[in-house]
Image 1 (cartoon, rainbow, N blue to C red):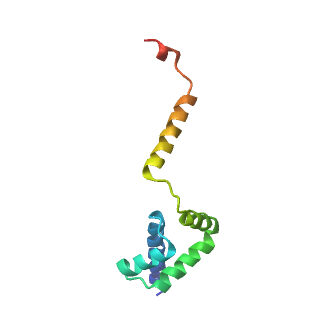
Image 2: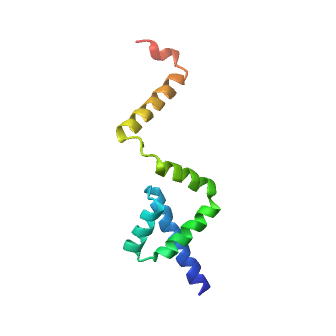
Image 3: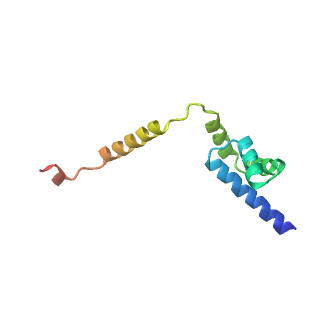
Amino acid sequence: MGDSSASYIHMVQHLIEKCLIFQMSKEECIEALEKHANIKPVITSTVWNELEKENKEFFEAYSRSQSKNDRMSEAETSAVIQKMVSDHDQQQPKDPDEDHE
């Protein structure tokens, strides 16, 4: 039974990691796994809690990002990325032959 229990817990952990990728809260993750994977809430909650203990810094940062209501829109994100690319291009040394037309 030990191997199958460990395998089951590993599967739950993997599903929780997927929930994290989709920026789900703990409650949303518990609800989603119960509904779509038929995993009891107490199991998801227990595995989540253990992951929090093992990865304290990550979950603290994750929790802070979850609590921000002012997340950037897609347009704002795009603008930031474009500015970063532009700034990077301006910092690159210019090829002297490039300016001659």
